[in-house]
Image (cartoon, rainbow, N blue to C red; front, side, top):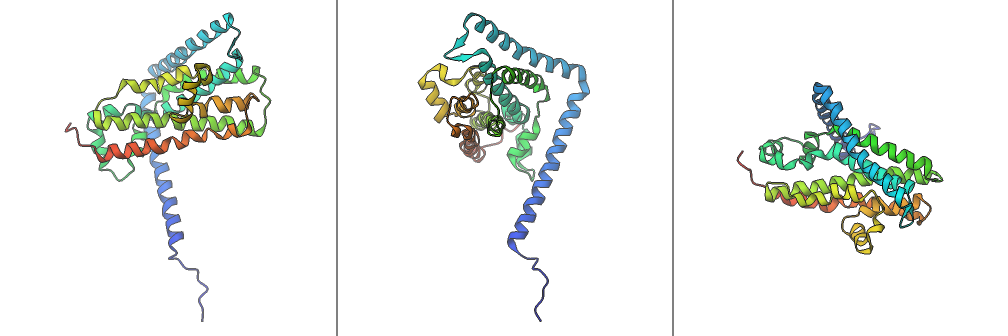
Length: 283
């Protein structure tokens, strides 16, 4: 007689079950990291809220600068005040998301110098996953609030005609931008394997990009636009999709934030090279 009992040793089924189990375990562990960091931040509530307020006010100073410049010059290379606020609000939210969740890479020099990375390497979890859990910067919520206010005002006053494609584009810009800035933090961390110290010039690609990102990239000239398109694709998560939102660009511009995710590939490869060449600091 033939058995009708389904086979239980299917390698594909086993691999799928193993993947789901690992994903569930990773999610639970990251939630544990998240709650530990949150409880730690809430131990000093006054300090936490004052720091959040400080982050809000720092970004607000930039907003004031933009406001007074547009009081004198009504447009910048054809972009109005409200369109610039829309642009800067998106860039600031992208950078803020990366700072909240990928701050561990931005402080990686201290992780190496204190010998913490040696302990990370002997644990049975992915290195990148553990570094991500080392630092979750909740105080950047203040900057996110400021960015959200600027973005909401730009949306309300900018005359954007909304459609499902444009809603998707905004969400894709936020995800792609957070991936791009996280990739730059990952490059910063990878370089630390060779220098043991953070290199300040990398701030040009992080804090500098956040500041220059308050205006569409094309106002800085063709060379900068080429750099921001093909080398470090800031334009793919800011300038081109913004043109689509403002009905000035082609429909496929809405797909270009995928460049932020593709940028993670060389960043990850550089990280792997750094890990292979890492030698303990002896701390």
